[in-house]
Length: 211
Image (cartoon, rainbow, N blue to C red):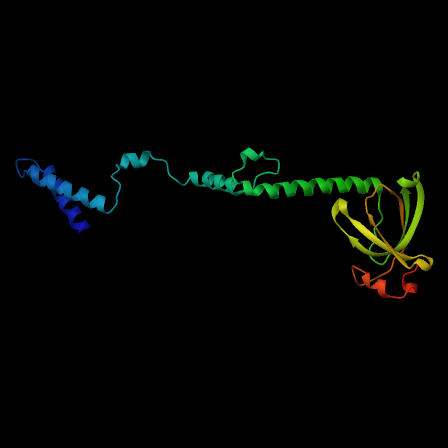
């Protein structure tokens, strides 16, 4: 149907191009053919745009990289220091705050480690601590025991020591790893163990972990 309409329109145009002496197309027939062609074009959703207008329109190919870059920039997560009022999605706020806290804790941990210089140790090692007691005029006391647990929580890391003192039985104390009250820390003996937590020593004979 569309092909027939185009053929009729072409014949009408050719008839108009011939001199009036040989053939003269009626105006009504030309108008009817044009109306039929316009209705078919609108039915097929064609755009009635001239070739000059299409040539003047810039092609979409050069704009593809710029559009792709804009989409990638919009999809990328915002920087942690982006103000809240500039965020498009507020649900990313907890994630940004967690990232900031993690970064600050890591920097603080590196500063404390360079200042306090704690030795590397793990469960099973025998450790001796020299503690400054604020309640006793900052006098130094010594505590020694075997490490039965170590919890790595950045600046909140802790470790637990267990020892036997006379007839009082087993004593366990948990210390913050970066506590300022620990004036000195020594690893007296390193023992190889297969577990990360040595809580089973609580039920063993005291001779196995007495230091």
